[in-house]
Amino acid sequence: MRRGRSVAQYAVVLWVAVTLNFALPRLAPGDPLEFVIGAELGALTPGQRERVVREVGLDRPVPEQYARYLAGITRGHLGRSIRSGRPVADVLGERLRWTALLAIPALLITTVLGTAVGAWAAWRRGRAGDLPLLTGILLLDSLPVFWIAMLLLAAFAGQLGWLPPFAALALPSSGASRGWAVATALVFPVAALVIAGFGHTFLVARAAMLTTLGEDYVRTAHAKGLRPAAVVFRHALRNALLPVYTHAALSLGALASGAVVVETVFAYPGVGRLIFDAVAARDYPVLQGAFLLVVVGVVAANWLTDVTYPLLDPRVRAATPGTSRAGAHPRGPAVAA
Amino acid sequence: MRATRLLGGGAALLAVLIVLAVAGPALAPYDPASQVSPPFSPPGAGHVLGTDDVGHDILSQLLAGARASLLVGTMAATTAMLVGVTVGLTAGLSGGAADFVLMRLVDVMLTLPFLPLAIVVSVFAGPGIGTEIAVIGLVLWARTARVLRAQVLAIRGQEYVVGARAIGAGTPRVLARHVLPSALPLVVPELVRAASAAILLESSLSFLGLGDPTVASWGTMLFYANARSAFLTDAWVWWVLPPGLCIGLTVLAFALIGFAAEERAWPQRGGWVRTPASRR
Image (cartoon, rainbow over all chains, first blue to last red; front, top):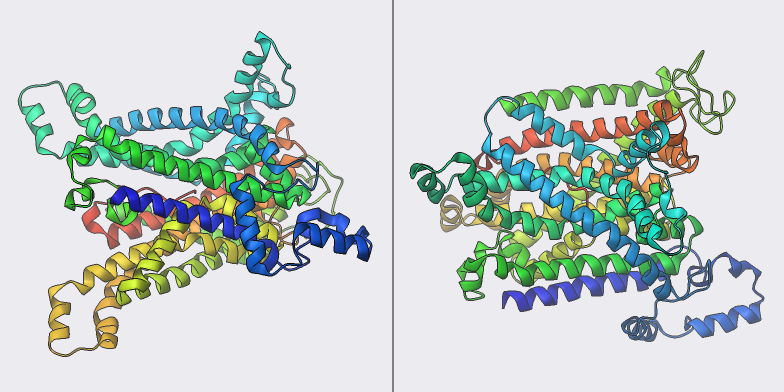
């Protein structure tokens, strides 16, 4: 029941994104045709213009346009790039691999690092240094991601000269050196995303750990004489990991936002840089396609978390869906419903 | 105790920023929008932080940026609160189908990634400070709506409210006497949280070239610094470092106040439990 409903909810998110893409060019000030073919519009003769309008279907009633648009989306028709004339779906396909190559390591490193440090901070809570630590984490969370990226370049590429600044721009086309070059190109962007995402994961892990450390079974573990480190890392951490897991998937939206600006700074050839270039060139079809792709990614990650969560938490697995035990899900029924 | 210290730190920081934003034009040595000296001048006589790629005085731009960031941040956060509070109260009080539809809308808004959504909408709406405020307000209201609705539902179930209804108090009276007084204090931490998120979003949009071209905001300064690869030269010290630090300190000021306000509004949560302002 709960899972069935959440699939319906994700379908609604996708539908809203698609509908937004359909509505924006038609609601925005200016000629909707400009959003299909770009600034060339002014150079068209009335006859050519009429032909293009008919080709694109803008002369038909809006409900029919909408139906055709939806049908096209399901077949992967996202229009053509104004700048290059290529199908948007092809452009996105090329860029997606690069963003996955960046986002997956960033997410893994952030989660592992944030959890370890967060659990450690929960364990030593109340001792000196708690307040400076909180302030430091809040400051880290307050810094713009793109600025962190620029400072990384300033320090390690500009001043120290350890790595080339825009390594992703000059990759060798093949051979063993390519793998190494790609890895080099990933260092800075991944580091920027990890630094930016660390604070959040840390706070979630710390909070989850504090809750778990207050449980009876932890007191029992202490009472039977286990070492404090064993109690924290072997007994408590397992349960505290559940909210962290949920957070990791939900933070994919934040990661996508971070990737847009970080890829822009590093001239990294992913979806984020594509969005920046599309904004600069007012390449509307590419921008809309990229937006839809990001939404699909976020929705897929959310759904994957829902599906895999019972594998991690036997309590959820044992509970009959739809009963009160659904409340054991840390996101609570309000989100899961 | 801890809340007080955080609040003090955040309030002091914010006060300094407000003074700079208000007195900025009087303090600024030059007009931030006019070319006053050769481009790419390092710091020196007359220009404490040097000049940018077209010869604007960077210190003057920094002062003007305080005004832009605080204006957009607070206006967008206020917009988000107006929408969020209205939706939250409506959903919580009416229940039924309206509640269901509004809360599904909240779910959708919270699932959509904020920055890509804001980018797409602002590109179509065209640049301008009004667009920026509206777009940022539009992507930030959902959290508040959910918080307020939960509080309204909690209060409606309280025995004293059930009692008040039993002795004949109508909906307007229950709303004015019981629901609003205990729901509205929650708006304060939400507002502060939304303001810090709004300032970060504004800086990201401006950094991507979607800011108001006539307003020198910190994000716009970094957009030009990035376009000219200023971070690879010595200019990173006076052109890249200051605007980012200003954004960070402004967001931090709001985050500290928000944290303290939250510890007071939700004492049962023990403060440092929830995560800071979302960057999504």
